[in-house]
Image (cartoon, rainbow, N blue to C red):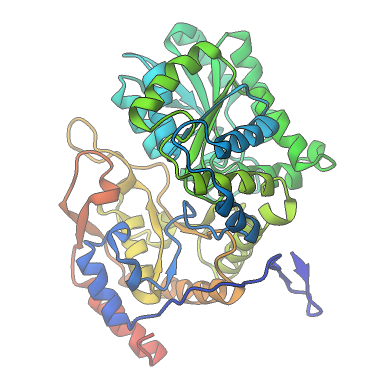
Length: 480
């Protein structure tokens, strides 16, 4: 952040744009029609209808010039590619692990890890679940236990590490189940579904000690590690004098297995698993070859592998990894000033709006976060993502699993949006909050059994979107 003469603090882009991509803002009636065609599911919108794509930061971060340049030297060999060995060397350097397996993305890592380690009746403790990580564990006969600290689910908080695991709960669960029922403990860096909230270095060290004392494997999802590293460096007193690389190594030393999506960590399309245990590695590499590709490309384009290798090194640069969190903090604080309910403190990945407070009149069974995400797109052309009850699976009796939090995530892909984009988003969302009583709920018209938030289609419970459009045109005297 930089302070202006006026006293205002703003995030300062530590890069310059040399290649640009045209986007367009369509009139509000066209946006409403696009939302109808998409079944009120922002995943099903066509990108040509989107002005600002804040659905995710996965695979849509801007690459650096050095990443683009590295793609030209890729060794496109099926086996034994020099590109892989550069990728492997960088991961070994950063994480200190002996064995590296490339994959096409993070969920491929989850599939392989779960198939090797999870058995029928297994229980996997974690700080908080992610949709696909939970699904892979359940598909292999296991279940999960979320052991997040109590502060983690408080939407308004000053607690700086809301992604921490509750150590007492972890010890209690191990005593209750016995270590044999627990194939591994999972820690997610930058817990996605509670607002990109980080864990502290102190906490993962405590988790690691409990795991080592009980001979249990500790697995870390490092997809959002860059944000978590920034927060540890800037928020944890004991780490302020440490380099990002030193913090990375201390975290890695706590873990037995590290996996990641390169679409987030490294800003290119791929992923990987890093581990030390040769026996587990031997089992994983067979599945990797079966599901992904040979062990020196793993279903990943070698051009992307070169880009990830550079991106991983750039992750060690505080000027680079601070950009996302600073823009998110600015957007969060601006919305908060305007009375809009947001998750605090600002986390990584994106700005998270508290839909339970924003549209408190909509019951969870009518999917308030989904309705709010649709309304935001209609009035602004901004595509966000529902992270609430729509993202959960139904219970066995057919009833909805009501989410702990109802969030709309507005991701800020790295180095993509300018400050004027962020200010536009704040303005339109503030207007929507002032007219929030116009928003009503949604109901399913097509509902898949698994991962319904990806493919499901919905419709409004009334004609509320028409009234929203009319009020927008009346107030702004424009259709943009």
